Image (tube, rainbow, N blue to C red; front, side, top):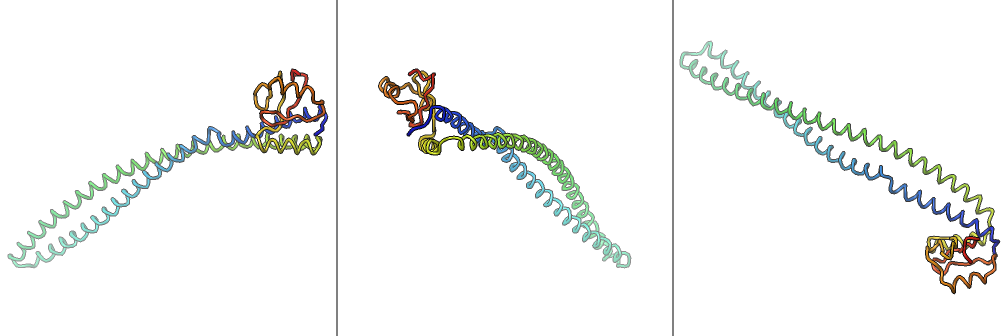
Length: 243
C-alpha cells in the first residue's frame, strides 16, 4: 500500500489518541472511589443488618411491655373486684378474699418489676439504635461525598474523551481511507495500529529490529507502508528511525 510519509506520520497522532482513550476507559474502571464505595456499601449493609436486629429487639420488648401491662390490668381488676366483694362477705369468705388479694398484689408487684426491667432494656436498645443510626449517617455522608467526587471525575473523563473523539474524527477524515482501514484492522487484531521506528526500535513492540529487517526497510520507498515484523502495526519512519 502506498501512502505519503506525512500521512503515515499522522497515524502516530491517531494512535496516541486511541491509546489515551484506552487509558481513560481503564481509569473509569479503576477509579479509587469505586473500591472505597464498594467497601462502604458492604459496611452499610452490615450496619443495616445490625439496625434491623436492634429494631426487632425493641419491637419484641415493646410487645412484652404491652403484654405485661395487659396482665397488670387484669390483676388490678381482680384486686378491685375482690376488694369490693370482701366488704360485704362473711368473715370466712373475707379472709379467703384477703389472701387472694395479697397474692394478687404480689403478682402485680412482680409484673411491674418485670415491666421496669424490660423498659430499661428498651432504653439500652434505643441507645444502641441511636449509635448505629449515627454510624449509618456517617457512612451515607461518606458515600455521598465519594459519589460526588466520582461524578466530577467521570465528567472530566467524558469531556476529554469527547474532545479526543472529535479530533480523531477530523484527523481520520483528512487521511486516505485505505490507510485508516489498514490502521484500524491492525489495531483491532494486535492492539496497536501504528508505531514509530526510533533508533532501530519499534515502538509498537518495544523491540529492536534485526539488521536484516532494518536493511529491508531501508530498501523500501518512503511512500510504501511497512508493517512491524514483531507487532504487525504500521511502522512509521522518520529522521529518528536510524535507517
